[in-house]
Length: 286
View 1 (cartoon, rainbow, N blue to C red):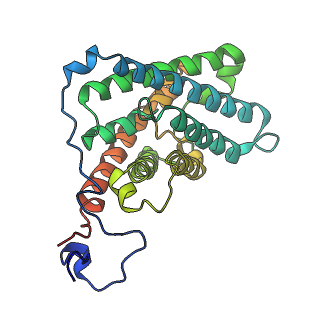
View 2: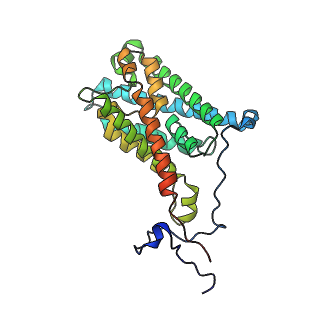
């Protein structure tokens, strides 16, 4: 029949497996791939929206550190059984990401994490100019957020209860910590790519997705798994802010892990999503 949709006889669709739910037919009318972001875009520096997005990243990361580090401090002060415990810490991190991504997604994209920014940059979703600016603003926001927590707690209590700084916990090696950060960040950034993929949204328009929800839930689950190993970084700005305000040798000894691990994990997630996941063909019209 004319105009009848047929499967593309290439790639994943050339086999006889049952077609997964949600792989509905697509045409160029349904979705067009946006051009990759330029590496350098000097014109952005003259745009108020560019600076507004950076301010949004600063404020979001500030609030993220304030709530989450204060939660960690409360658990360390009260004891895991007398307070919200590890589950409560994980909910604080995941819940804040859910809320803040929801609030800032329309302004800056709601990255709130240099690893997310780095992964999206590798996928050519934003320019190098914007990526560097975001990472600077995220780091400054994290430092200010941790600083406010120290102001509330006081220097002695802040130091006594660890300041929310990420370290590799006793019983684990640096390799263990690095692996946990790589895999944890992979889970997060892969979720970000999947939840915000315009091509997938066009294909699966019948499946409503509130993007901040799976992203926040991924953060929650990764924290549940890796708090016992590293306290869970998966966000270099979060680790940097806490380390600078805490400023003790043992916090700096392992600090490289919380930059190298997340950046490797983000790069792997970007490559996997762009080359493997996005390579699956769609149906086309004759």
